[in-house]
Image 1 (cartoon, rainbow, N blue to C red):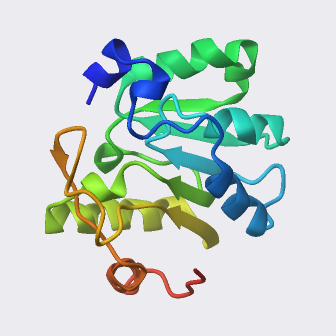
Image 2: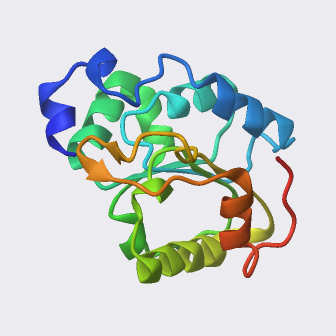
Length: 174
């Protein structure tokens, strides 16, 4: 997927949103404090970080596997990028030293297709969030595409996503 960050403009990327209305709504509905620890998994050069900073959130982390995507976001944000914690890593290799109040993933979970890796992702998420954390996970719906950017994805219904998370997480609102 790294080639998408060097060869395509924002509007040519299938996942591009000029403004992340849905994610911002979910974060606002969660009632998170402005200093809540929020991680955007797979956030790369998404504009969620821009919207969060503009909205007054002060404790934002962006994790992405692509150094180029992170570089693009830092460039776009300019001085404001210094207030963000940037992690260039595969989420499955993430080493967290922080308990997040909100785990946001609109771009990664559906790419985790092997059962052991799905279990690993869920465990990393569980180890990285507070017990009262808000999880915002966007995946392709059951009738969505089977591939994204040439990569296989797993499609989930809300019920299927809840079922896979139930052994570790207990309260769901959707």
